[in-house]
Length: 218
Image (tube, rainbow, N blue to C red; front, side, top):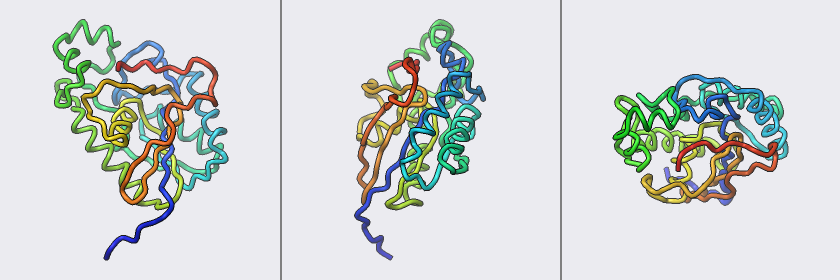
């Protein structure tokens, strides 16, 4: 059966989780389950209040604690219970997890050079390559969009996940240096209509106190 084109785009609000102590320390979290700090908890509530008028019909979230707690706070403000989507977890950084960026560079210089150079095949010794993560994340993103044609939904996720989604939506290569911000609890809107993706707004922080962190390397 042929899919009937819709005239209204599906809009997806992507929210990075609130701040954690490891964000403040520039420590690589990956899939280690770190919770929000006090600033992060305030940011999560602020994001929820900002989204009250966004006509959201569904709320999804990575099941890692820092994202899930952010999603619960947003959900409490907008009247939606989050649905867990493990596919939106942060990248698995293998031997880098738990290290600061400086420590990772010192302990694993060759690997760090591959990471910093955005080698899409590098997997941190049993971690996850950019290519593998891209397939995981974009597959789920398209599934979520297909489930809510013409409606507005929100997804709470991680910096590395936002990094690959931005490239997917804009059609840019994974190897391209980052030219956009990914602040904690920043709000980003993308949309899709008849298979064509667009970036609407990115890195909104008007709802937050000054100083939202973007500790990620470019």
